[in-house]
Length: 583
Ligand code: ARG
Image (cartoon, rainbow, N blue to C red; front, side):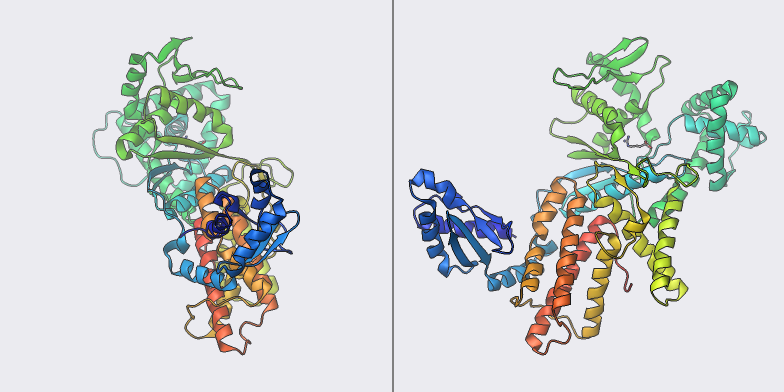
């Protein structure tokens, strides 16, 4: 559907043209003085020089022409030459009704692209912590937005399963349970199906092993050797590694689904390893990679760099590959499997240099076609109220599970304090509302910025919060339930300022959505629904909706608020949360 602002601009442009001026002068903006008018146009000011006429004379002529317009009304020419006007009420109602019957509220669908979005980035055997939260929340929302825009989007968790952590776990396990069959090199039979550890053991083993490696050189060496053996496909180690993967992935999926985050793919860093030898050879053949201080590197600096961009190390002097090597090989793999038009990485912005190097090597080596976009969506740090990276009260790394639990408890207490609710319902609702608090609290900030995680503020039912948005939706649901009849379809002409303001904001959906999807900016949707929720609540407080005696009017109100709820629900779905039935 054509955007309202562009329809209005065309209408004004037509009037300029009919008066003998160029139509481009008819560009319209939303008024910055809503007390005076809804829209304005400064075209007459701009045209004055060109047509050697006083701007107010041009504005007068155009205003006169617009008196019979079906799109705009109350057109006033204001000295020295501005055009102020409002949208015609009937036109507004017909526009919204058209939007309501269009697919996806009338957004413009662009040519669909295939997009891989790399987000989440959990690591095997390490519990999810708050650092992973932002990637999951932002990535999930961007994925949903790009999909809604009509693209084919593949969300990949890109599991970190390839590194020293594996050797550390294996070594520690061997120390604790040396008799396990996995460590018997003579053994040729099948390995047990059951893992020799639970997820809680695994989560305890890793930090213990990593602590040991820091103080015990011998242990560190054994872990390093175990990693190399695993990478060389030792049978027993591979079997343990598969157990580690399975146990971890199950646990991770459980935690991600609590966040309503769902990946299409669970590819692993290890999946990219087979692509490394050929890729390295190719980098050498193309003359890009050379030996420097024993390591194999590619120069990626550019003359226009303002910051030093060091050479990208491909292989260390002992021949081991690195994080960069894995990411390059993953690009090779993705190109082979999907031929994506875009790959988007939702990763902590502190990894920006890593991606600069990886992207530059990819371009130099032409790992992907020239028009394939490689994009880094770096996010800022989630801080505590003290302005430092968020920690537990004891100063440790906050596990995601515990953070979710704390938020849910806070919401639960609020629900119980405000009214009598049976415990089970309150717990269920606390989960739904708690999720909105976490996600909205994060997404309402521009992704690249740091933000302060504030449980009290995020869980408040008032102000710019997830729970406030849900509260508004639930309020509408409750009115619709009380109305008790089938929801009327036709939205009628507005009869008050608050109703019109609400309707005008509803028409902005397509425009806001287009920006959010072009800029990967869920925060724009948050700002939009906050406005919309405020508009609705103002309208609600000023209007007797259910008590309205004029039945036609009442039906129009009901149709309007029901559609307002649909738009709000579409937006929160795109942000990655949902509303409960009651609150
Ligand atoms: N596992 C990594 C970490 O915890 C994040 C992975 C991000 N994605 C990527 N393709 N490098 O830091």
